[in-house]
Length: 474
Ligand code: FAD
Ligand code: 2HG
Ligand code: ZN
Image 1 (cartoon, rainbow, N blue to C red):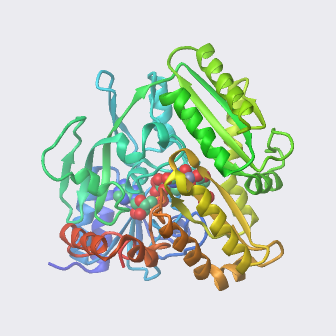
Image 2: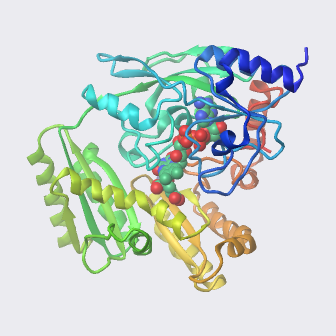
């Protein structure tokens, strides 16, 4: 049976309480614009459920009223995935009121957490209990666990602990038809048919709404040493990575690469975040070792590996953080590259991954073509080199209007970058997802069979196309 829009709103108000159905344009505004300021949407209402049952009831009502849904977490998407379209006919369901940590199982080393829990809150709760929840990224103060799982977020610890997918054992999901899938199983082995959990992880709100998850915890390391290392070029950076991998194995928990241009930009926008390494190295690598033995053991390892790196000419300088606050300042500098770029003006982002062995050729070839075609173009190159994820961002020449430059050249620049990604067997989206930004590029880069299978899955799980239409699949 159908439901008119006004009956739908009245139903949501009686279910959630009037204050949790936002209708006023000023109240709705923060939920309608994406973090990068690229997309502006409209919405019938913003709905703020408190329980899984609320979410299920709302989704059922949406099916009856033919209102499509944009699930939303912390709204930190880099590709417009959580922004509604401009029809004003969609609802945003933001999970921020569903933030409780339902339980922590010490012997099983797992935690059950609701989707709206802020990532940093979970990290801190785990730490207070002597555990590490290793997912770590620049937006951790505002992104939510549901958003992290829906995007299969990556971040800085992937080389040791994997993406969000690897950290999740079970999910509670409200399906596109409003049923509750009770999948909060905390098992490390579970081969009972198709893995539905893995379908919902990374589905960007297009298949259902994640309401809770069982996540893995790890013992807290007893010591962490962080260093900044000056490296002359990309091949040396990769050899340095391999050296650390060989000598420190699972102790290596961070290996972030930052080009000179990316750190110059950070220092320009945030003058107190200057690279402490002298002589502005071409590349600065942030290395982190986490040890379960002792402070001395980790420090000794860091020093001996760095000495080998100096002897073989892979590195010319390094500074090891002497205390927690210095280590944090290294990470803050790294995490502020994105903010520095945002303050400098709109840029064209390419969140790509490549086999580590192809990184050098990719950068050399793509830089050359872009610089030939777009004189003075700035390439802001940094990323999670330890797992092959490069943030290959392109900004207009100094003095050019970013909006005009991007409007005129965006497609050509994306095409050049993605053609090189394809040539080197990489991925056009390593960790940020597809959203609406990369929708046109997906088919070309996943191949038609894979794309068709994704459409079949979408149709089977969301026959009314109610979940986040216009994202991932057109
Ligand atoms: P949102 O932006 O609100 O939503 C993202 C997608 O998930 C949308 O498609 C939305 O519909 C869907 N969604 C949200 N919640 C749910 C739910 N409960 N159920 C179903 N679908 C849902 N990403 C990385 O991977 N690594 C990084 O290092 C990284 N660094 C970042 C740094 C900054 C400064 C910023 C702004 C972003 C960064 N990101 C990074 C991107 C972003 O933070 C992540 O993608 C994050 O996982 C999104 O979480 P969110 O809660 O903000 O989700
Ligand atoms: C990071 O690694 C984020 O800092 C953002 O993934 C990357 O701004 C970007 O392109
Ligand atoms: Zn990243």
